[in-house]
Length: 220
Image (cartoon, rainbow, N blue to C red):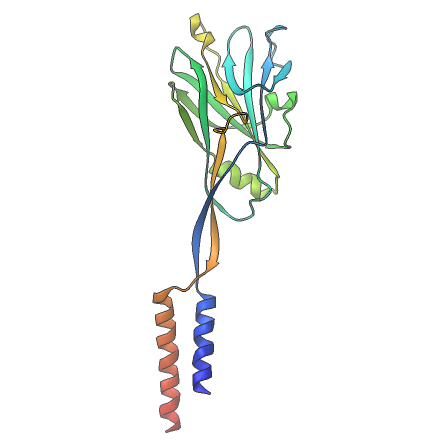
């Protein structure tokens, strides 16, 4: 009877002790594009057309503006996200540097439309100084979208307009999903998994064995 009891106790110990482990993976864009205001028509703050070529561009001058939009399917992420960041590969850029890049986030739908031109809330701003890659922390953005049960995460990339001179020609274009090194979304999610933890098992087992020993002495 006591032997069976001990076996049951240790089996429960192994199944009750939990630790948190991180699982890392990445997501490629579902869709991306560049949305233009101008130059065929006067720049007026409204989107005119969408370009789905092999770049996601951010440019802003007195003649026209282009904003890059990237959307990701996040419907399969159902556990707490501990870290998430965008990894953007630069396809081409032009100075003078530095210039200001802004990142806006929004609940997307998996399709780029002209309405995405003005969509989003500003969550990050950087001084861009030419780089082969760019990394942007989006942990809080992703956590909020998942908590709201959104299926897609959208990001709108914008460049602030320069006031004078040739600085108005400065831009950056990131590689799109046409490339194997697209703008990937890297994610670390916390998994609560049941695994044996030696120290906890030792303490639990010692306490239970002491309890059994005490019961035996009382019977004697």
